[in-house]
Length: 432
Image 1 (cartoon, rainbow, N blue to C red):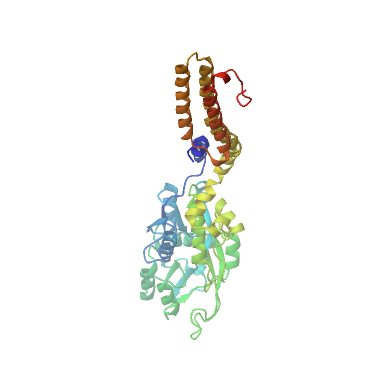
Image 2: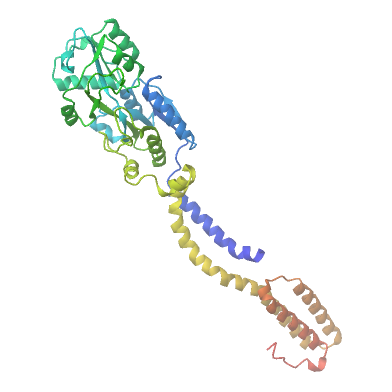
């Protein structure tokens, strides 16, 4: 084993050096913690953020949630590098944001709810112009969408009538009569939405032009709140209501590690693939319902699904193997010729341990032949005995034992030759 290691340690050394050099070209390992900008605590975005945090924790990735006022603030955090990923309302990003922002796809419909008081009634969004309307605070996606829809309807909206409140506060104000209408971008399960859908003082304003708005705005989708879908027994709503809905997206910075994007996509499938009152199962996550550029990792995921390694190995192992493939080519290139060289080198080193003694043996034989007295020959024979003893301690693999015993026979022959002076000039064919 010692001889084997002596032969192969240079190969191991070369392999280690090659590994170190190759590691310089391997993609860096994914981070173990990221930041995710969500929304206000208690809102749907923050609740989804908690689910992402729990799922990524199973892969050893810690997610820090950032509570924000909404999509506009989330965009700013992404742009400033203070967030790695963010939940964004469709349509909030501008074309120039594509320089630093990409998306992993659409996640779910966010219906744009427009509620007005029944007195006076409002038959369409257009009729809210001039009324006191809660459109959400600065930095919220609801406010941004409300202002864009106002521009679509080309009405002279009075900004002084825009009230910067949202959620339960806006619902309370509407029911008290402090405002005439309120708009929300929220899921059906939002408590204030459920409350207003059944309140006798409020009514849901339909979007009869939803198909046209969808064609004009890539970030909007037309959806229908089906008759009775909220409550079949009480027929809530009493008729089909056409609506528009931005598609919430998972925005990421362009430099977010692809492996982190991959597990975010896996988490998105677990969270958003189930059916809802507005979408059938497996509608989301969706790489087409987005107004942002898909990241290359997301494009690959939607086309091929999880990587082959990810299907069989945990996240950490699969990621290492995917990054380490670059090591295989240079290492194999180095090791093939080195491994082929090793057996001949091993044989040479083993036989050299045996044959190197022949130099001493020939020198002692020459001294013995030249000896003029018995005392000189006895001294040589003494050295031969020492040589024989040292050779006896020599260890070689079993397959080379015949070479070792041949050497020992030759030592014995020279010793015998010196013990017979009359044969000292004879040349044995074994020595010749």
